Image (cartoon, rainbow, N blue to C red; front, side, top):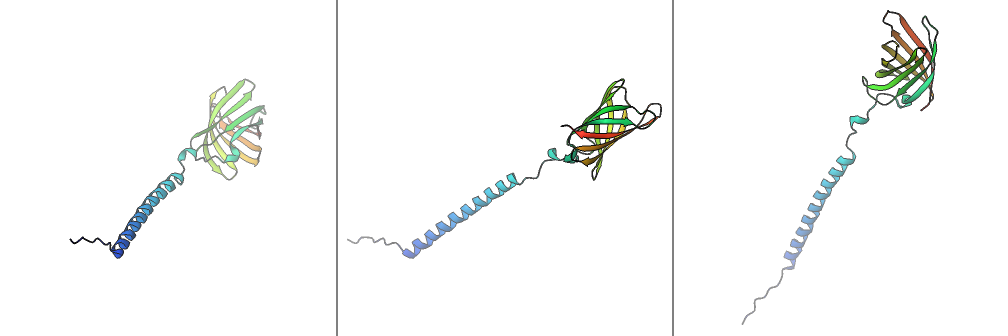
Length: 169
């Protein structure tokens, strides 16, 4: 009786083993590449516009100080300006004036930024102050703003108010 002899071909097994290693390495490389792309996309995704601000960070905060009318009257009163992050055209803060006939409060929208100067459009929504005007604030130091307001009353009278505000918050 003859027994079938099964002798493995060492050359054939070596080739098959090499192919298995090569295929395993290729699959690992592909999976690694996919994982790298996904992680890269997640961690390097572009920032959302939610955090974009045109208001320079040095201006953000609560500012307060004495301001004086420079046209007609020379009344002096306390002015508070609160500024926060925002984009051009958006509401970026509030104003409050403690005037003799009661406080005035309003909101400000960012009009423009140029260097260390910010221009705001103001709308008064409470009190007897001029309903709309323009505010120019210039950073004079880390805790100091030069405040300049300009507006026209219902009777056509031009009003300007100037002063220095200090950062209080």
